[in-house]
Length: 255
Ligand SMILES: NC(=O)c1ccc[n+]([C@@H]2O[C@H](COP(=O)([O-])OP(=O)(O)OC[C@H]3O[C@@H](n4cnc5c(N)ncnc54)[C@H](O)[C@@H]3O)[C@@H](O)[C@H]2O)c1
View: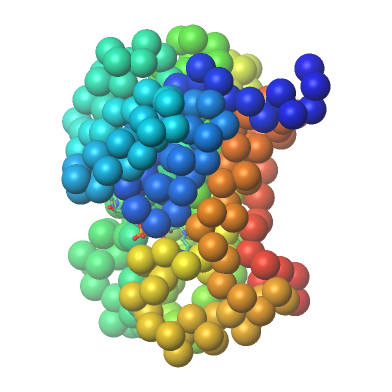
């Protein structure tokens, strides 16, 4: 296999959660550019449909589905629908996520649950139900979108629930890599630093400048810079890599 053909995803069937905006949209387009047919799933159906249209313009097949990743019934239905249309699921990208800033002593039970149920339980549910299909077909590659927040305490903002959710994703990724290697399934994660998406831009210019100053490249990443990373981990180019959390952060965590 030549090196460039290792990155080729032609004919592969992928799901990207939260794929209608921000990072997820870029990841879905990146997989499609590499040849995959993509199911874009998220709470907002209109955004998913728009991303699906753009994927079809690339000559790939696309499905748009309304899915709340926190709801087991939604995730089970997603698997049924995608299998019906695509026949199988080769790649799962768990990207859907929410954030929030609040001091731990003021963090309510509800706010804790909102973030953990989306960022961690949502990853578990999608891995579980899609994983069952991948086990049956003896093939699969899962890429969980974690964060550098899974390795450290963010600052200056306080967001312990978000960081805890991403730390959980990192460890869960390694556990699944161990459990499912025997089924020919690889499970990896990407830990982005600060990337210019709607989630991040909500914080305003002052915070964006501050965060940019915290990495050695002195800039916020562009969502498109993660496309190559997801294609690499999803593809045969990473065939000997499992249980890895790949940091893509402009050098935030190195100092
Ligand atoms: N932007 C960053 O700097 C950054 C850094 C590190 C990690 N991340 C992670 O990247 C992922 C994408 O973040 P983003 O910056 O693009 O944010 P975003 O808010 O722009 O997009 C998040 C997407 O997830 C979807 N979503 C949220 N809750 C959902 C649910 N319950 N069910 C289905 N879909 C749901 C939203 O509809 C949206 O499409 C998240 O997991 C986030 O934690 C982002």
